[in-house]
Length: 142
Image 1 (tube, rainbow, N blue to C red):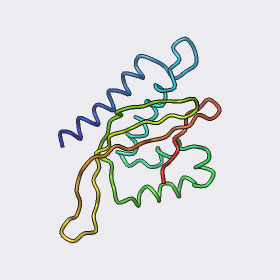
Image 2: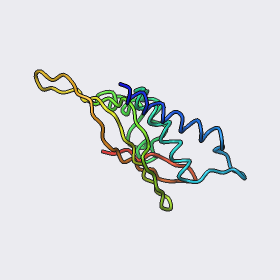
Image 3: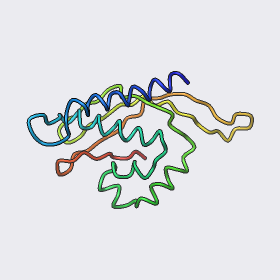
């Protein structure tokens, strides 16, 4: 439980430091692509951990949203057998109009196996972002 709280706190502190020292607006203090994507990743991760699926939808790419409406997205996310308990960004890199963010996620998996109701673990999740019309969008995985 301590690790989960630490991971959540680290994500919140990271976002606060970025937001406190820089702005997302154009101008002299414009953020780099990596910084923008990391800020968006932390906000998206926070919504994922809180299971606020309606808040995760606006991060998704226009291509995803053209085929999946918000209600379908919420149903899909709410029916997952896994819950994210916390996480932290461990690396990020951008190449032109694409970025990849690696997030160590602490999760709880609910199992249909008799005698084992759930278990907790962690893994690294690779999150892809794409830049369209000067905006960064999450490309949902399968």
